[in-house]
Amino acid sequence: MATGSQNAKKAMEWATEKYCDQNNVCWPIAGKHILAQFDEHSVVVYQAFCPAIAKYAVDHQRFGGDKFSFSRMSWIKTNFLWMMYRCGWASKPNQERVLAVRITREGFDEILSKAYTPQTQATAGLGKEEIEVRLQWDPDHAPNGDKMDRRAIQMGLKGETLRKYATEWIVSIRDVTDFVKEQSKNTDRKRLNLLDVAQERVYPVSNPKTAQLIGLGGS
Image (cartoon, rainbow, N blue to C red; front, side):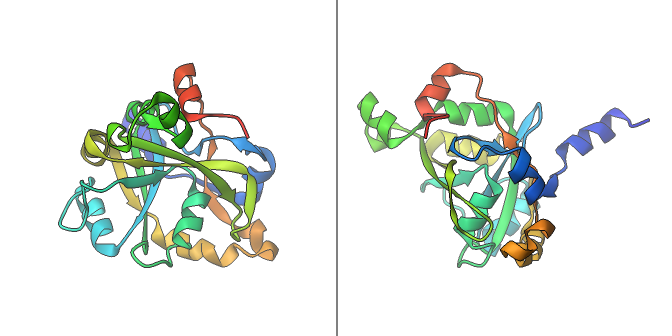
């Protein structure tokens, strides 16, 4: 029988699953949805960095060091394939290392509650300096880079929200670059049946005010 600590460790593991199985059954084909790996207590987000920032983060299980800037906006993504599109499967300069950052679900929900799209920011009459989380809905992408009808989120963090994300809310930081490079060989349509990606499902946003603020669900 598994012990409590073994069950907790299993829940903390970064899970992967066949792309085709998820794309054909689990993921919406259109609309604005948050695809993420999550459990009762945590949510995984992705960032890609230069080797120096990534090494510090993995070694210390938080962000910091000489290269990481707390004065600039730092962007996180919940969707593994959206991260792959942005970093070119860990091939773009200063994005050679991909990190799976597991943060508390409470922290993630706080980030969402502070997130403004350009439209909701304008409606609220807020200037850029008045918001700490900027949310963008961008076209999601297939493994080969083709645009999809479904939208994916990325969120830029700054100020106190960035500090709390980088130093307080982190549960674990895992370097998944080796997995990324191995799976990049399977992005051709003829090899999609071999492609493994992060296990993701639609994240439920239970607060209606937050759902409205971020424009969830629409096209």
